[in-house]
Image (tube, rainbow, N blue to C red):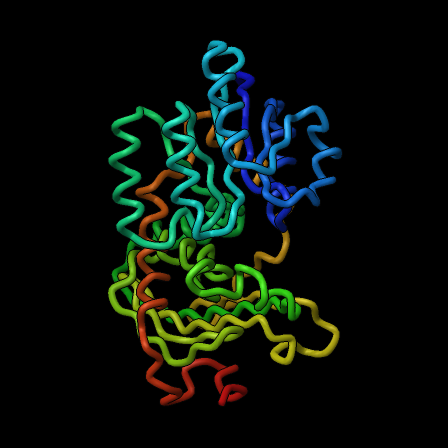
Length: 313
């Protein structure tokens, strides 16, 4: 595998260490890092010699300087771990800097942003790659193969439950701002919606039953499945002693995928570097699905659509 030069935007957040590890695990070089906050000591564990910038203008100038020094020194890939609402702008920066973009979920917040990036890809000849790591999980691949082999045009009944508590800080950060994060369905649910649309087809209809800053629930009709979904950031929804809960049942059968998450980012990078990454077209279905949730008005809890809805008021 060729050794490429990377830049990274957003080193201080939760997901950045996975990207730093992925770059290192694949024997790539990280030359430049941008983050407006300087609490980024994690860099020392991976690339202590990387140039670090807290100002975008100086980062931009540095990347341009490297570009002018030839292919061996220029930035080939930009990894984007910034807040969701900045992904579109930072992907554009990467493409215009003559580099490919690797972006954490969600790729963009709005479907029309994805369409515009497709045009910019064509103009620059560079690619945009989404981190859709559940598509690389062995259990999920096995499930997709099972569904594909069956080739039956039947509607499966799916119940998706994801409870991952967050502290008070969450709602004071950009993640708690719906305009910046896209809200709970976009911020913590998009990987699951991507996985489900990948396996069972695009969303045909979506009904939102409940929405608050820390919980959301609804029904989503896919081409080959009806999905009852519930997402929560509130630890009151967990059983005593639990720290998180992740469950997907299909026709009443639990899909086990609690293990196997450890190195999926590193594998995602390997796939991208070897020309098999997931691009804008692959990411589009889940962007459309969560955008529909975001613009919908909840109709209320009319019926027992999910086992945990009884806890909501």
